[in-house]
Length: 235
Length: 232
Image 1 (tube, rainbow over the protein chains, first blue to last red):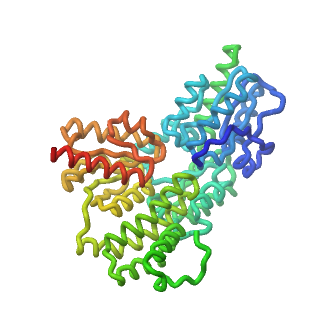
Image 2: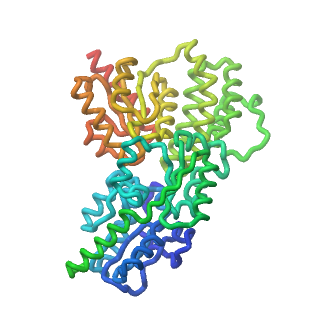
Image 3: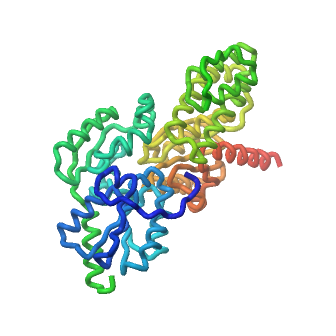
């Protein structure tokens, strides 16, 4: 964890969640557009859906492994490496990460590299809309544990096992004792995911709330970038 | 860490037992740690020596391996839980027998933040190092810090945050201390995953603590300097 490995490009070729978690998503071998999104693997399906819905076919996508979120200190170097790898090939690169626990370091890095990133502290915030999320926090919603579609599907890989709860369930209350409820922010409408999220809440000993957010500020950012890049003509 | 089986702790000599307790702490074995503490007490060890030589010594190894990426959060939690078991036996005895007091600290997680794993580790390690710790818990507005400082008159104020969105609140607390003319009365140490040294300096803290072991060393250093300055 302390040694920073050289940048290893994502190798994943599928949108299967476990592959997005471990390998990420490789950039297309031959670019199809002028714009590249370097995103978190946890957002791959959502981004593809937004791009399809909005006809953004001039945008390519590569994703870093979603598991980087378990070690936020590695995200900045990984983005640095990915931008360096692709900047000669694409006219314009955007980083589809929020701050994601980097304490402002990712924002500073993106400014240094001259690339834009998504505003907000994390995906829970931009899915709900940064302003709305901030207002909820101000109003006292600080004891909520959030899950998105991706995190519900990858709950064991992202939450349960990394916190050692598969082997040491007695740690549960040390880890989650200060939380009171799990809020499932759904991006798509899937009753099976709602039930799975509810089961996650049960396992964590938390109340459950389902809040449909859709893609929130993620969609706003992607479409604005696409428009801005198209209108500028230079990408 | 240890592959041996059926080790009878009471049959080990003192040195072997302390080494075994290091292993047991590393493996998060609470009952074994409690047993080890009781054996050393029966052998006439001073509670303070058990705390520093066996428990803190063991947790220091755990802390170093966490820092180096060998251990992860769950293992540290288990080790902390085991140490807590040992400390619960020693704490009342330390109060009775007296132990060197290094100083005192008020510590809490800032407003809007409910994360306390790191804070709890710091509290425990500070207690183990001989500090009187007043832990005011989570989600603390500035008023809570001011009240606790007024009540306990600590040497150190410790603030913790895990969220990028809550860490700026540390500056609110420090600025309020400045406004009220209190800032120079306390050593202010800050910590939490998204923080760094630059942030600590920018908000006017005395020190940024990367982990619990650093917090203890920094606290000792600052308190020693404070006492030296007072006696000069």
